[in-house]
Amino acid sequence: MDSSLRVTNIRDYRREPARSQVACSRCALGELCLPRGLSADETERFEQIVHRSRPIQPGEHLFRAGDEFRSVASVRTGCFKSYVIDHEGQEQVLGFHLPGEIIGLDAIHSHKHVANVMALDTSAVCALTFDTVSSMARHMPELQAELFRIMSQRISELEAIAGDLSADERIAMFLISLSERFSRRGYSDREFILAMSRRDIASYLRLATETVSRVLARLQKANIVKVDRKQVKILNMEKMKETARKS
Image 1 (cartoon, rainbow, N blue to C red):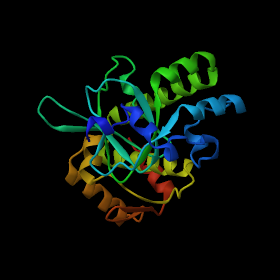
Image 2: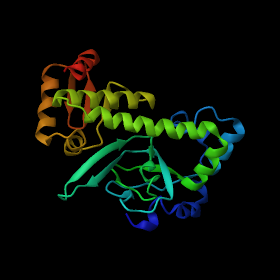
Image 3: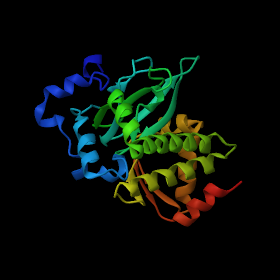
Image 4: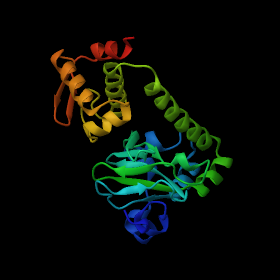
């Protein structure tokens, strides 16, 4: 994605008056990405700094590793993956980002983005310049607390998959996590589409692609899930949770 189109250059989105202003309080994702506990005045101030992107096509990058840190983004529609390239030139997926989730906080420390962030399907984001967010956070404790909550949640997710877990446990935990995240967005927690490829899932869970396919087939044979290409239906959530808890 050309740098003139990235969210890091937020000025481009201000050229589209019809799209620039976003009423967060009326957005279906407002409860997910809008800081909790804001007053009406604070919500209005927050809405004034949010700018809505044009559609971002699959394969286009929102940020690239090394880009200057200017803004963070909340996923409005679609799905993104964050990844790095290791010293052997291999792609390592760090996470997947669904509607209502915040992307870009990896750059706070160094002021440069550490990871690449790429759209997996047709997507859109709401962009916020970080300088403005930081300034507001100093005067709005609820906004500051929300940023800390998001960063803490991300650390917890990374720690969960870093443990000494079997392939079955990793995939069960991954599907349960997706189920919970979709549920928070008002979607079904039992049936959903995987925007990410088996290869991306394998990279994220530190498994071989063939292992992911084998485990999904095994879970399907046990009537725990039904898998049809990218569509997943959880048939037995209790059994799924049991699988995730096995040592």
